[in-house]
Length: 48
Image 1 (cartoon, rainbow, N blue to C red):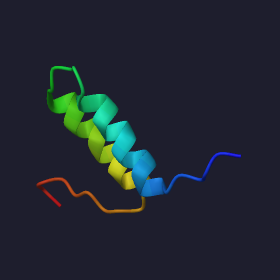
Image 2: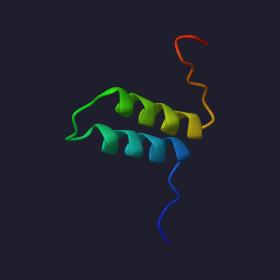
Image 3: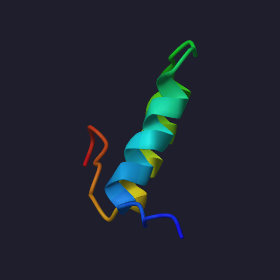
């Protein structure tokens, strides 16, 4: 049985996949913020 992966490690893997070999834009930032929020962390907009 494979070892369980820590949720933070899954989030980092997902972020790396979004950044790797891709052109980054504002949508990339939004997608990464969503991944971070899924870990229970707060990511605030500039206006917050």
